[in-house]
Image (tube, rainbow, N blue to C red):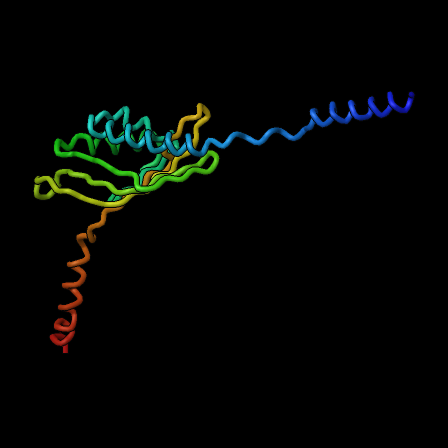
Length: 181
C-alpha cells in the first residue's frame, strides 16, 4: 500500500513540476497584424501629405530617424526633418503620393518599398515638374507598440541633370586635344 502512495505522490509531483517550467511560452506571432499596421500607416501618411499637415507627417518618424532623398544631404532627427518638411510644404505646387508594393516585418523591425510621384516647383523655371521614383522605408516598433520610420530613402527614376553635360564634354575632348598640337 505504501508503494501505491509513493507512486501516486511521484506522479503528482512530476505533473506539478512540469507545470512550473522556467521556459516562457513563445510570444504570439503578430506578423500579420504588424504588416497591416505598416500598410495602414502608409495609407494614413499619404492622407497627411495630401493635407500638407507638417505635424502629422513628422509624426510618422521616430525621433532619431534619417531622411535620404535625391539631390539633398542626409537629414537626421526630428528637428532636421521638421526643417526639411517646412521647406517642402512651402511649395504651393507640392504633391506627394506613394504606393506600397511590398512590406515585411521581423520582430521589432519592418520595411516597406514602393513607388512615388511628387510634383514640385522647379527652382530655375518656377514651373511645376513631376518626379517619379522608388522608396524604401525602414520602421522600428516603438515602446508603445506603434511603428515609426527610422530610415526613409527615396530616389528618382530620372537620370541626373549632369549626365548629358558629361557626355557632351567627352565628345568635345578630342577636338580640344587636336587644337593643342
